[in-house]
Length: 570
Image (cartoon, rainbow, N blue to C red):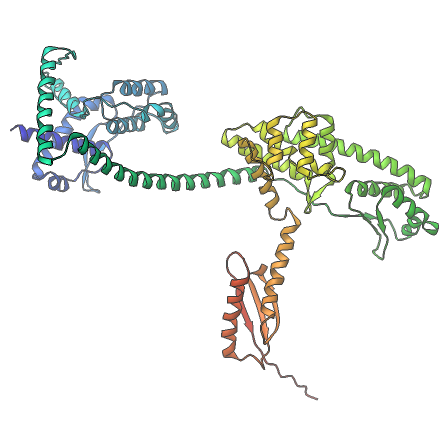
């Protein structure tokens, strides 16, 4: 009788757990699982339905157990859900966690279901975050027995209006002491008998057991570490891509590319003669004062200013434009306009530096550093404007730092100043990194900023996460398609290499790489390459391309063979 009662409790609890979890309860399946008939399962469901209607139903959370014809099973009907405030739910969770009445698995399941049913979806995450640590470090009761059975008994007693007596005993009472003593004696006898049967001492058996357990645990630990590493790597890569993508999208801006030449438009070709002057005096004076070369050729209504120094080139451009506008071109006037142009460029440098710190939100920079930032406006790296690049790196680093919960001020400051040495690398010895570090040390910049500048090319190890973000932002800005001229150069080189491979085969007349290098069309000589040989030649070309080139995707090898006969009717 006692056994039947225990089996029924286990069935009822099992079915109840499925219903609470949102699962469908099928009578046939449950009857097979527990080894009873369907009528017993129906009676169990009726008991649960009766209990819920009388006790749980009045809470407003769950009304009834209903039969779902579509799913051919029983489920809980949830209606009139009452949403609790965050404070109320937090208090309930705290009471449950502090009670230490349930096993950890039962506690977590109950909390999740409680929060899911009684708190709005917008606030569920907030509640779970507030009790996160307490859930993870939950201390189970010493008895290690599910308290759900006890709760069921208490609920049944309350339902039947029965008297409940709960007896607590102190650890030092006589009955408990005697019971512990008897238990210890029994354990001791069993240990001696085990030692006699096995022929091993307690320590030897313990050592064997620990050794076997260590081997087993080592394998499990290794497997667990591999799984965690794999999960961590996947999640990290996913999060990194999201952060970088978000930063790039948010930092989208217009970018310019400077070259080694500038072009000045002329109102007419007659102006070319006036610029050259009698015996070339004017053009010589302008070239001497500015240190650049003027190219006056057959290009209509245009003069080309050539020079490696962008500052001098800008001075010459402004001076020439002023001379053309004034109309009076002679050595004295040229000297006057060059001085005015230098002043304008100097003011432009200051404004560019101030614009950069306003766009990035960096404050507290020394005026000399602001001027150096402004000089970067006239400095290019692989065709990319260094000032725009620095602003871009600053914004990217700041956005990623904000997403990661780091110091955005440090990140954007280091990003803006990471290439500051390029403003002086023509005037001082050393790399732009070394020069930048010396300049920042001179003006007593933040040590973390200096480290980020020094580490952005991997010269030293980064000491902060922000320094790593500056490295990443620098690489992102430089690798943006179209940002630097080297991308186009590498693209053209790849196309030329593809055509070279095709032309190296005998019987090939001409080859053309098209579709951005994704296809190559090869025209073969019809007298040397037959239709059958074309198939073999295509395979040979494809094999050579695979062995000698690195490329994304695939390249289509397209061979063309044609014979034309031309005649004329007279």
